[in-house]
Length: 150
Image 1 (cartoon, rainbow, N blue to C red):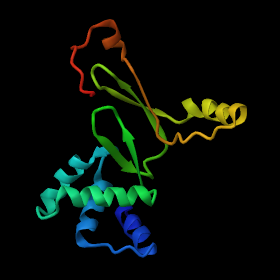
Image 2 (cartoon, helix red, strand yellow):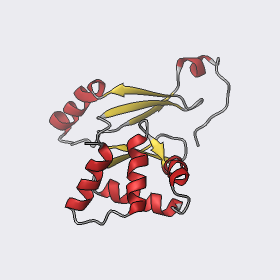
Image 3 (cartoon, rainbow, N blue to C red):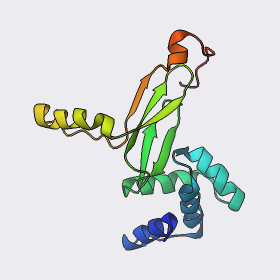
C-alpha cells in the first residue's frame, strides 16, 4: 500500500472528506524526497491540476500536521518545510552562512533527550530538531559569503 493510500485511509478513518484536490496533494507529498516547502509541493501539484491553488496546499498541510501525519520544520531559509511523519525521526545541522543542511540520526541526540527527562524532568519534543551553526568551509572562510538563510 502506498503512503498516499495510507494518508487517504487515515483521513477517511477520521471522517474527513478526501477530495480529488487533496488526493493530488497527498500524492505530491508521497513523491517528495524528504522535506519540501508548501511552494515546492504546489509546483508539483500545479503540473497535475492547474486549478489547485496554493491556499488549498497550505490548508491540506495544516490538516495533515494537526493529524500528526506530517511534520514541519524551520530549516532557517524563511519557509517551513514539511515531511511525512513516516520519514523517520532525524535531525538537521544547517550552516548559517551557506545554508547547507546535513541530516543526522536521532541516536546522536538520544542521550541528551534522556538526560533532560531524567535529570531535569523535561520531556523534549525532539522528533525533528534543527541545529544552526557553520560548516567547516564557512568557518574557515573558504565558502562564498552569501547566506540562503534569513
